[in-house]
Image (cartoon, rainbow, N blue to C red; front, side, top):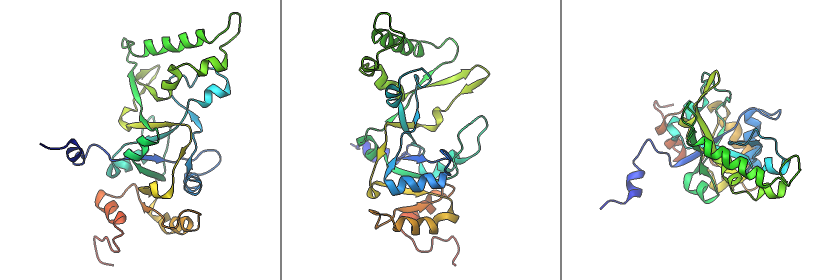
Length: 250
């Protein structure tokens, strides 16, 4: 009899880790945003996601839809998340941070649930949209222009919507990001240096980033730094602190 754990560890299509890649935003570069995350031990939830992100709500309600995004792409395939992909608005420059999926789950990170919106496939999105409308109606006092914030915040469906995304064709385009295997955490994601598996950065930045991390409080033993473009064995060598990974002698 074989334990399922021993089988899953041999599945190369499944990742043991989740990765958060940074991007240029808020007037800061992806490199600066990564440095801020590492120094403050916090990934801030700045953006609302899910099926009600575009609805007009009070700021307190919008805050409940803000999430931190991860991908469970295996480390050896992390490079493809940083490619320039047609019709993809988000661009990653190779800066990021990885945690074990086990740690992430303990902290409330959960896979995104993708609902098919291909024309005629409304048996999933239709009921969700109706639940949202029902929650808004139940939270709206008679004669009021909109829902009461406190009542709406108590609605169970709004606890789920940050994790609900759509896949399929839209007007003039298509929304197909299920292949990213996205996971999300509602609200800021807090961690310690010991929780980090690896830090991603272009190889040319590694020495400078290590020196920078060594000066931060609570980072006496900086985590391994790898390049998303490296192959799996090069990543393993970095994690094992191999002095001369090759492939040729220096």
